[in-house]
Length: 426
Image 1 (cartoon, helix red, strand yellow):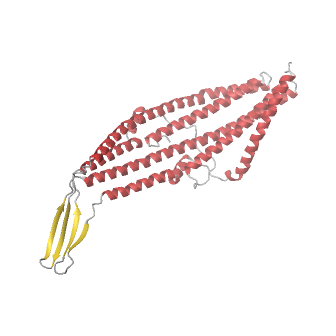
Image 2 (cartoon, helix red, strand yellow):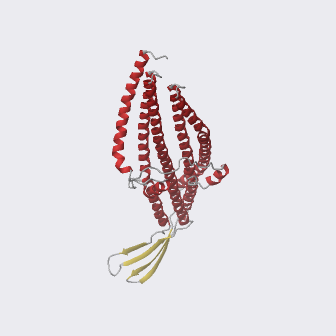
Image 3 (cartoon, helix red, strand yellow):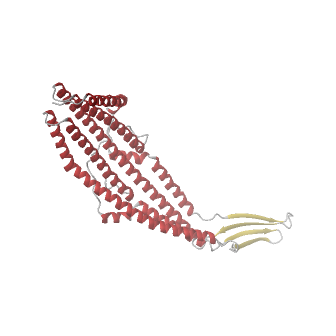
């Protein structure tokens, strides 16, 4: 039986003392967090995805702001229907009673050339634009809540995985200690087991910290006024399906971003029609009564028409036409960008889903069998602790990779729903 040199044992002992010092700091933070929240999380109800989405829609200021913008456009539509106000004028000639004449007139500007209709169309398209902005904000918020919710689910599983890994490392350390006491292994093997246990303790502390951050992110989306919740309750392994490419193409035409670009184009075209209609001056009709001492009462009728000699509104027309051209190009660019983003998200969803399925059905079971075989062999003295440690580390890394791929799958599905403004992947 061969034992390590005193020099190597001393280095292992130094590494062990350093790891124990780090672990003591991590355990202190973990213990304080557990004491702080032990009395509250026991009585809190779990949070489901549907409840989180409903709370976010009800309370998040992003949607409230978009709703206020929509209501503001209702006022713009109402104002666009208004006609010009009439004018009431009074004039007097001379101050002497015998020669004095007074005139009272009622004047009304009459809009011609389709100005009112164009103004109403522009306001209505502005309201449609505000409506799509509300839909975009809602789709973005739901997607953010979904990603945050599944992120909390994943962090909960990471914490559970870290706890399992710590239990495994503790059992391996106890087994190594028994082997050293029985003279079947060198003390360095026990030192390595203690270092592995310390590393697992640090990973558990980091997993708990990540879980707290995930809870804070989800709480920010569902609203500060929302009821405090316990653990997130859901099935992280229920992977969303990959949508068909033809279905994506059909749904893309109704996407909020594309609708927004369309309404923006229609609004700029209506504004261009309004500026073009302003080339035709609006006449003002007046009707009144003139009263004089000598001639008595006389009806006064008049028509006034502005002469577009100095201002023909050419600058505003040019600006409106170029803005319409800009909106048309923005619509084309939005369609291209949306199509690229959708197919990119679909590709990510398809690849990550395949990798998740492969890890779940093939890789993880094999790694689990390899670890169990190494653990049994180590207990029987057939394998060294390095073999167990390597199998344990591989299993932990594969489980972490599995959670990463699951999150990538859910994130890609949320991105597709964000772009389409739908919730079909929930």
